[in-house]
Length: 174
Image 1 (tube, helix red, strand yellow):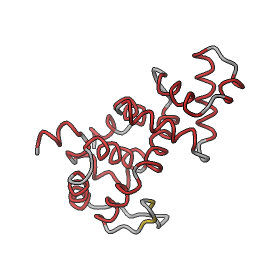
Image 2 (image 1 turned 45 degrees about the horizontal axis):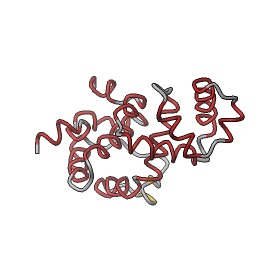
Image 3 (image 1 turned 45 degrees about the vertical axis):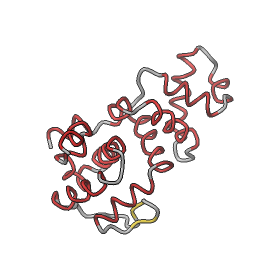
């Protein structure tokens, strides 16, 4: 799991995303009602960077705020985590559901139904990751698996060694 620490930081995942995925994540971020604290942080950073008053940034349309957020050279771990989670909740629910189905974990539209999920064996995680990779883009699978790792390393720690976590390795192996 030593490799997982390097791969499981939200800010690193954010930087690895394609431009299209980053823009989709930023749009989802600004629409996320549960991300108010992270949005306030992003507004402050954007206002400082573009030399606007905070109030003026708040008033910008979501599309402009999304472009400004994507243009930042770096974001905090909290903002990156919220960006990635918002992206998954808006754009990746079917994929999330397929992964949980492959593991036999009850879910509602890709969200785990039970409050506590027991750690899953490495073997079952590897099989589910491979199944997911057969039906989803490698970049999406790697991002989702990494997100699970940094959100809950106790439950999902067995994903640290699956090749699908590193899309360049997984695609060259097939």
